[in-house]
Length: 384
Ligand code: HEC
Ligand code: HEC
Image 1 (cartoon, rainbow, N blue to C red):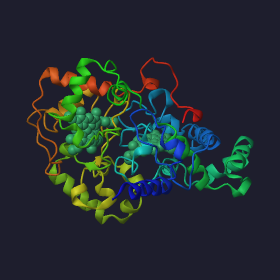
Image 2 (cartoon, protein in one colour):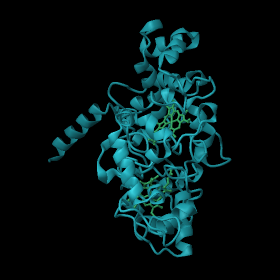
Image 3 (spheres, rainbow, N blue to C red):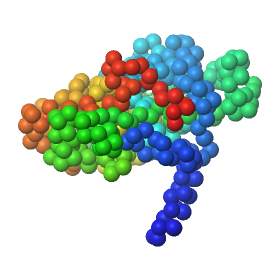
Image 4 (cartoon, protein in one colour):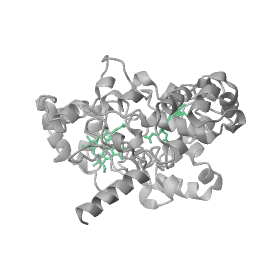
């Protein structure tokens, strides 16, 4: 393709994703432009409305749980629990991922069962172990009658009263989440900012292990101009699946396919049934090669979003590194299922190399999430 044609194609792509030209050139250091859907452009007023909705506990059956109960601003938008706790302290089956940089995922949830942030936001409200509503009517009642919401929906969407729909509620929440992006970590300043002092020598050595001997970069991708650290694909590392074993995983897969209700209510099934949760991507696609596979997480801010993995089973970054070093088993010599990704093999890292790899992962924290750092979790609308 010649340069002119290529340029036109890029423009067309930018328009399809609705990336305004000004925004496209100013994402945080180390990140690509945030993909913005053409039918839901970012505006400061919409982001502010989404922020309010995200923090509103009235959207739960008990009036106690908001999105931010589990995705807490002060905890880097997660909860530091192995698995989430919703209404009445009911436990789910999966670890709460941060929403920081979730805007870069092609599919949402550990198993990718939702295609967009807009589609995702409706599920927790009606999940029995999260916000526990029977349907979305109570949400609509509040946003249609609360004077503060009335004014905001009027300003953002030009609607009031019964004209307010769930679609608009979800659009605003998604806009807020697309504004929670962060780069500019020591890693970004070292690699993309040209500051050779930004990372410690140990972290620099760790980066080389990440890219070479550790083969981490195969899935947690890096680019010459930015790094999202995810291939947006699904892999079975052996977390959860190894514990259940090959036979049990096969039985669960058959039981899932046979039960129509389970297939229809995937969100409820996987978050209320601990075994079914381990099916991973399979519960969405029904493909055997997706059995026990979960989405590659964006590793940014990983030092402040413990514990780790879809089931929250690994407590520290050293636990994670040991797991990979052992070839995808928690204890050396343990057996992995036949469904484990071929990309997972023993690494033979020395103690020093393991520490360096952890130092690198710690260099991925953005300034606003550094523990005890200045508290400014949300980039202001004006700064983007
Ligand atoms: C009870 C705790 C809890 C509440 C309340 C909650 N979430 Fe979550 N959130 C989770 C868990 C657990 C997951 C992962 C579930 C899965 O992948 O199956 C998740 C996943 C997500 C994801 C996907 C992130 C990714 O990496 O793919 C987004 C976005 C998100 N939540 C936003 C929200 C919004 C918006 C609300 C409010 C409408 C909300 N959450 C309410 C616990 C919670
Ligand atoms: C084959 C693809 C693949 C490779 C190679 C890989 N990862 Fe991962 N990584 C994943 C997936 C998928 C998950 C989530 C798995 C799960 O929860 O079941 C994950 C999870 C993680 C997590 C936990 C993140 C969180 O928020 O819970 C860390 C940390 C991590 N990987 C670091 C590394 C390091 C360091 C290496 C190299 C030693 C590496 N990964 C190699 C795919 C990969």
